[in-house]
Length: 294
Image (cartoon, rainbow, N blue to C red; front, side, top):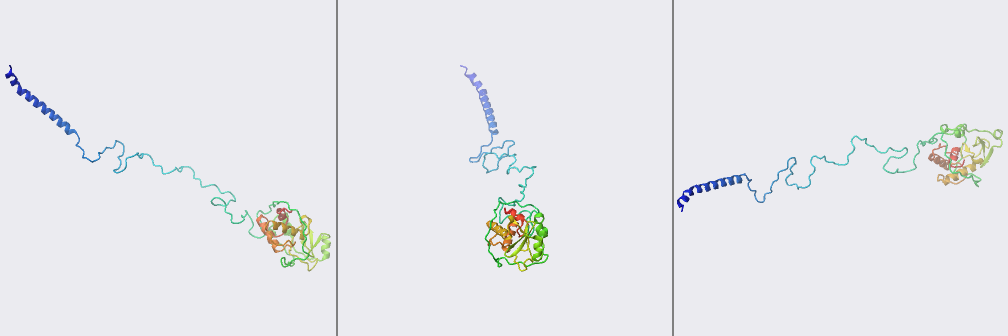
């Protein structure tokens, strides 16, 4: 047996084993030293933010990114550079205000008169209304002077405001001046163009009836001025037809008496004002045309 030989090699093998063991231990120590220390139990593991991404604040719920770098839109763009509309242009004649026009009274027409005797659209022909058939009225034999007081004669009197009434249709009013003559003078100048109403004489001239002052010194007149000779009717029948038509349209609220007294004159002025006519407060051709009576 080679017992001595095996014992002579034993120290070398032992040293080699020890050397290999030391090398392995050293290698394991180096590997262990390179690893990060173990995290404490219960502590959240921090994850590093990827390059180029902003880390979220502590305590903020992790969710869908808000899109950093994208401009935030606060609303619908106003269209920079585009002209700002100031609104729909107001229509002529239309009242300014939200939505519908609020009507508190009858609308005032453009250029409508604010003073008696002035009209909107001077010289403008009146629009003819729906034709009104003339009627014959059975009128009182005596005038009601309480509702239509008599007017007094004033030599050379002109109709106030008539100088502003333009157009040939108002020439009778501009040219009128009160005259006093006796019966012979009136007959010699107007012959058969004279009629009597409530005992007072009227003469016809250029389409109008006028008071014949002085024919009968005590004659009764409720109005000193022209009356349009509508449909060749005498003055009282003309007045009665006008009163009825104004009554039907809500302007006149008195009796149909054939007298152009204060109530009739006020109704005429109201109608003329609302229809853009000269406020003559008298029976003129443009007014009767507007009423459909001409």
